[in-house]
Length: 156
Picture 1 (cartoon, one colour):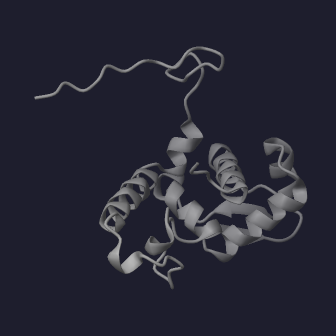
Picture 2 (picture 1 turned 45 degrees about the vertical axis):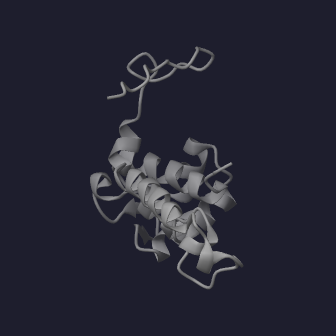
């Protein structure tokens, strides 16, 4: 199963909330609005500040705000800021591989293509897209309803 880490998931949720509000917000308010535990929210917000996606300001009117417009921040950037490079297999990470067959692996080039496709997809979704979201009844999938069925691609 390919799964996003909890840290990245929560990071996207926190930044989406900041994007929706368009103003500086303090950790307690963000934690309450997103229902993420305050210590976890604080840890993630500090990491996103270190990675250059947020600015923080101390004081009574302090809090966190986005460094750029939400349309200029991608989901891929958020994930990489919190989890490092997006890589499905160890041979793609760019570091020392733990794979014993990497040099002769017949699937390696395809893993690179697959990884690039996923990276491109995540790069194509901005924080503004996430903040806009799909609303139930307006194109979104209602929980409990059967998923839409798509016709198979015609073969030529």
